[in-house]
Image (cartoon, rainbow, N blue to C red; front, side, top):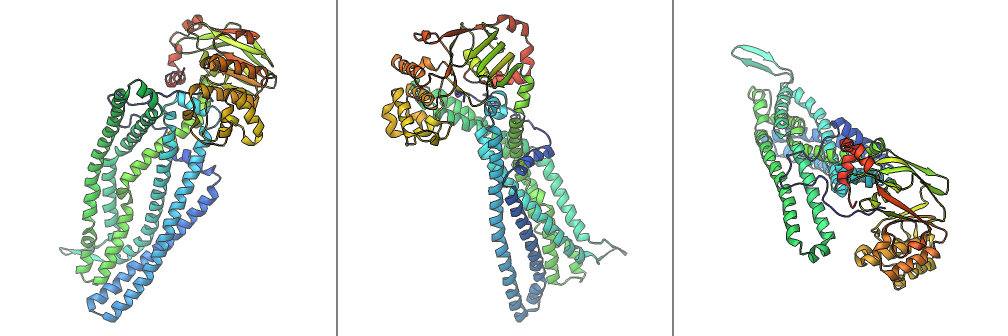
Length: 615
């Protein structure tokens, strides 16, 4: 893995925060976004469990709807008994209520459990899919260096994915409940108002099911007003989440580099930058609060009016003598159920806007991950091939970079098995880009790179990567620990001068924090001594160690890695004689001038260059 240093994300906020919604651009309409997410769930190994849970949810909601109808019908005999002061009937209806309420309690508890299990399985399926797509070979690096959607992937994989699955479950089950309850109660409300005739100034007319139409009108007007007033919430929520992610990134960056910040007395500068990031978050939240307050005029206003609306609608039937008091309460209950299900959109508009914003962020991320390979393949001119032959071949290789192009001093280079090759460069020629090009990470330029098939070549960056886990796992990474014996680990550590760490092989700490820079570099070479790869490409890793450690490294080259091919990209130094061949990396001003301003117009190249780190 190529190490990358920290840095400000490509879409980090400046001193003047962007306009709302500017940090995220839609990857398409809602249907396209849902299709993108649907493919993730359909391909999940947990889809059968998810479908079973959803079937259980549908069944429970349907039975709950039936019990709600029973509960609403119970209103008539109960309130009629109260109106007649019939104590026996009153007590009987209380027993009926206990039976209905008991059934609803069991159903509600069951639905709560099913809801949370659906959330769990949705999140498991989505996050496993996103991680699987993101961790395909070289994708994470390409995405981080060529797309703003590769910035803060932890936020999208963790918080955004969790939020999306929970909101999707709540909204989806809520919409399903509303649909079932609406279908159940609309028949009740229709039958209650189907036979009523209006008499106005001598004119008589009937509106079949007029209470249904009144509820429909009431809910539709509220929904249209909510959409008109609350529409901006989608973009504002997306902007807020982007700013939150950037602030979190800045906090993590400061935490990771607190030693260097303290040594350089940089606390004030970091405080200033953190406050700027916080200011962007707070500004996004203020915009969101203002828009939410505007929407509250609609939702709260309709909510209060709902207290009397069903009585106003049912009053003509009641005062005409066509309804008893109990029948009025049944009509009011049915009206409330119908209009509340029709007003589902109004009541949930804030949540829907939040869901749309989160869906946009996660869908954008997944789309970027799944298309990054084809985008860079289209923009690349360097041809990468894996060969069954036991050699590395570089033909007419020219590497493009914004700071200037570079090329190898020889047009056709073949590195055979067992060779020790030193690659040096003239000032200005970018050695790290050559390293990344050989690894297949930097695609821009011309020529052809052929390397042995995947798994045979180990690429060692300037800064070693030490994964989480025991020291034994760090040394064997990325291979399984069981592949090596205890004696192998002890020998590898002793060979590099770290024999005192053999007692810590099974200790788990943050090794990238617990060890000094030179110890980390030594540990990386101990890893080579343990794993003995056939091909090794090193990027200036020898320059960061002292002379004694360098002697131990070359002793490992001569003994443990005697059969390995070693390509070291770096400076010539006192051990240059240990290499039997030297290749030069030179600036190619002719290629850079002939490219003119053509390359910056290529959006993929430009975004890759701008997003690049540690180059």
